[in-house]
Image 1: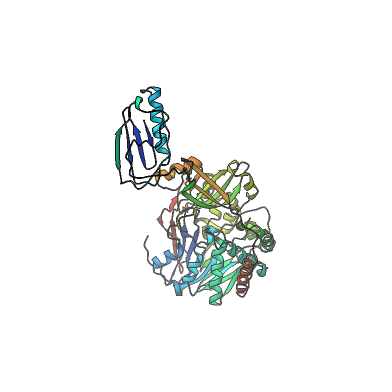
Image 2: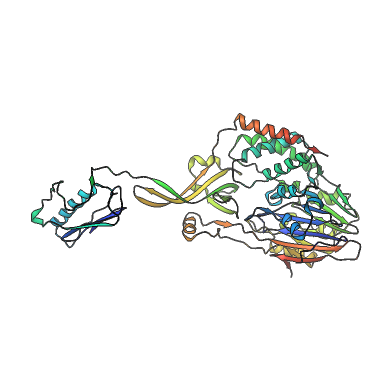
Length: 209
Length: 364
């Protein structure tokens, strides 16, 4: 039975508890599962020990350090474990710090596209790799149902959108994710209009026979 | 294919295709080392202009000997790479379809150009504006293309435009107004609804030999535009029959009219086309059958292939893309070159056609 953490592992057998820890700033959490080979009291006992360690922040362990110690016998340990009891001689133990999950999106591939045709339930788009300055492009068909409700008003021929696929990390879990968002910009500002007018004026000077 | 310059007494018409998505172009030798280029296309991997690459490979003095560049219409598959070609062709004139309301046209171009400046999107507008800037710097005049206009005489060779019709030119003014009105939606690319109507069809005369390059012009029942307008009203084509034809609009049914083949072309002409291997595959088997009814010399720049696979990426990336969308298809780059040469001084000569890369002859 063991608890796995992002940077290491604390595990128990029937009579031992051990910790293998990689260089770490914190224990990130884990899940306790009862060992059916042990009786309820022993399981509860181990659970208390493990929960104790998960509530600690371990810092600056030597790489791949390993500590092992025999577990106290049932009769010697109360399930109301005294939190000051040390089962393992861990080099440094900081105070409890609540775990903070960091949600983020790891992009695997992204495109910039524009709509070239709209059908009843789908739209067709030309998509170009956003992270490549050259190379072939692709045509893709998307279901209109997959578009967020507020974006549906932007479904027009020529509309520009950004599409990314990757992995979303949320509360410690990793899931595949697809994000399609249409380009949104305020109405053309005066500066852009001025630049366009200047260019138009330059181009108007070209002679046409 | 032998990459050597044609003789001064030889005309050449070379069609370069890419499979559909990256454009097509015709390189023309007018005799005496004078060259013209119609449209441009690119290699998407290098972003280089393919007609420019071809001319350089032949050993053409591009700076001095390219005399005319023609933009048949500003669709991505006809204009990409044109600014690089024009920049290298320092002695070249430039021609495109006539625009009546130039003030409005320039404003529209400038607005679209400004809008797309920050976006990584291949844009025909940007390419066209870059061409105009080069023309402005060189203090050249743009030659308008319209029905029966001689764009240039080069020794015994002449290039004339047969379209767009007056009706289409007038219609375009209205379309620009609408597009400028749409400019208020900044998150959209401008999309011309019927750019093929504005295509410039060209008549090439090399002494006694003639050729017609059909661009993307289509057939409609309206005699004021399209092929019917040329067949019914053009003076330039009277008494002329072409022995070489660039089939319009990837051999689509809308680019076909039987009278075009009977009235404008000699029997069994050399016919060339580029496929459109994207969402709607062109030409269809039915159209190929029709073309083969008119000629035994039918050439295409690459096979007609429907691709329904996305680009090759690493396995994990492919898996996650497929998980969310299995309807992605890469628009493949399939370069093909069809070169035809003919002796100018021999009125009985026939075109000698050579193939390179993916191009092939279509036979029954």
